[in-house]
Length: 122
Image 1 (tube, one colour):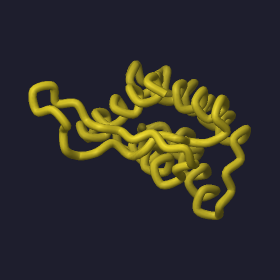
Image 2 (cartoon, one colour):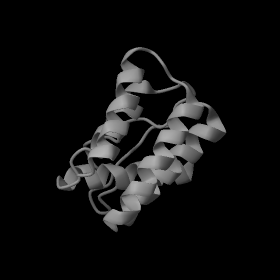
Image 3 (cartoon, helix red, strand yellow):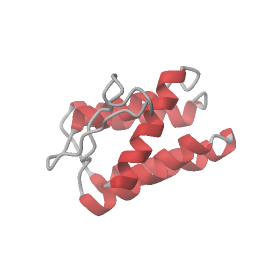
Image 4 (cartoon, one colour):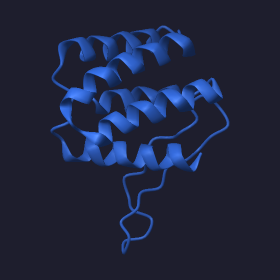
């Protein structure tokens, strides 16, 4: 994402996570602001990922989606496994946020698609 305001909001959330500040209401508000900015990008994967993330956080009061695996489960389908946990997964949430910082990387967009699938499955 090339928008400086969006990048600052992402950085702010990540700094709070490093300081063990996981306040769902603040994070949801920030993700909604980032989503509004992302609408200008015309990238439906990004916009959907942000919406699904803040809906997931709001309904679960935690981030329960694991980091997508690098290796496909089924080589025919090329699907990537994503784990769903019972505990708040800060590391995965931080990784999820980092994907938005460079959307020119194909793997970042692919991982966002996997997160979207996991959000919908949860």
